[in-house]
Image 1 (cartoon, rainbow, N blue to C red):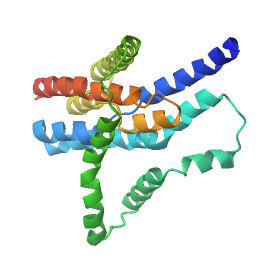
Image 2: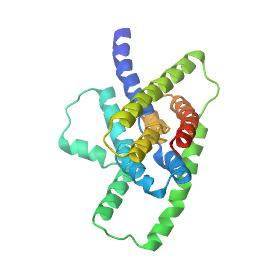
Image 3: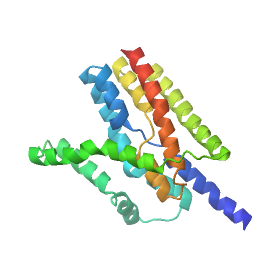
Length: 226
């Protein structure tokens, strides 16, 4: 029984670790820094980065983590697409992207109504994380949080350095990519981690710590890049 539990637990921890550490919160944190410190033309790089990031955050990362946990089970193409399009946020995102590509204007009245919910989104996301956060943390849990946090920011720091030093694009674009790579973990991470069987406070604590570290890094880098 112990051997079976170990075999089950290792994929579970791997999948949860992936979902906890994946994704970037661009809209709530990076965009305000870009608006405050840089010309408006710099915004395009951050928005393009967030296009792919959003697709992965909304559904892609969850499906990868679920596959790690459940193993390489045979799934039909129909089942895969059913899981992908079961996400209403992803469908909404793809629909608006299609309308934009087709240059179809959305009525202003609809945009005004949608903006009410959109403006409340950061507050609701932060409130959700705040509800899940638990400051009564055991020593072993603290070690795990520190380990995950170091894994995240060391890897992203190395990747940001490679992007900044080697990518054959303009300096402003490289600077924006560096800021995006050092953004906090996506607020969807704790939600999906909870669905996959994570401890309710573990992901929220990690997310909150990543916000604290990212704000410091984004502030310092923004001042250096100006």
